[in-house]
Amino acid sequence: MNKTELISKVAEQANLTKAESSKLVNAVLGAIADNLCEGDGLLAIPDFGRFQVKQVPERTGINPSTKEKIVIPAHDKIVFKASDNMSIYSRKHQ
Image (cartoon, rainbow, N blue to C red; front, side):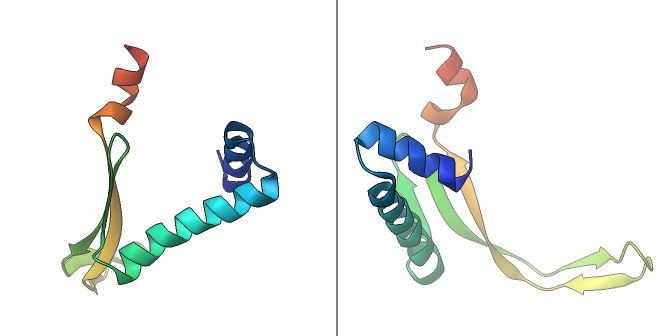
């Protein structure tokens, strides 16, 4: 599913126009991004999952073209951990 399909699905399920649904989806995604980038870096949604900013330490890698060792700098990344209620296994066996 892409963003356009998500907007259509939300419009259908919430009985909204696609324009209203688009504003809603954009607002929710914007709020999530703002919190992860500028807030406390954690967003937990019960029965769905948790988005969190994790710090990845500096490490040594190898340039595949030259086989030269390179230093990959430390950086932040966003990770998502699905709730146990969201697992494919548990949904199939309900």
